Length: 272
Image (cartoon, rainbow, N blue to C red):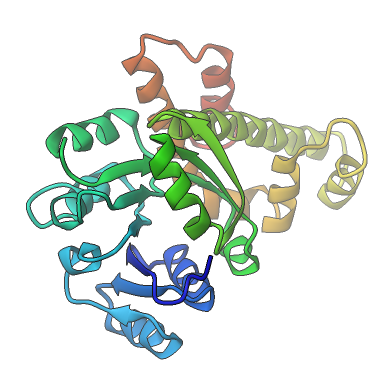
């Protein structure tokens, strides 16, 4: 099916969102995007997107609206309320949230607008380089019809798009992944410290881990960042948020994280 002329709304054209918009434009969608920074609006307009002057304007007339926001607080501000996406989108519009937050925030938004647009959760795994290559991983949860309508749009920058079930399941899966990644990163940082104590160079350690059974994706990420200190500066703030969100999500269901939390919060990296 041709995408030419199909309208997609977009809010949150930051480090991750901007390349998403570019991929959508390249795929033939008419992307009406709300961006606060003038320089971002100028870049996106030059690329073929249509800047609009409000969140509400991004939603109007779009079959799918995508939000790429950092926190639950931002999500509530943009998606909820009289000026938000759910209030201003058509009733059959699908609103996609890429935010890694809590399920209770999603269900609160759907309760606020029970007859409004359909909300789906679509947390991501990967970075801007994956978006540019069209290989971002997206986990997608929500009603079957809404998921079916959102999936081909997300395919402009995501492969794979993994469907997970009802609203909130994608987010819960992402939170499990994130706390497991945090635990793995703590173990890698601990291994680096042990290596220093035993006279093993970091470069030799990472070269060996890339081939040996103790290796992991976390070790690869730490290596590519330039070591534990550089990795911690760039990634730790995001991991702290994600670990806290996973703890909160588990607490909402009366579930303890057990050993995962113990490892994630205790180690060389400050993630608690």
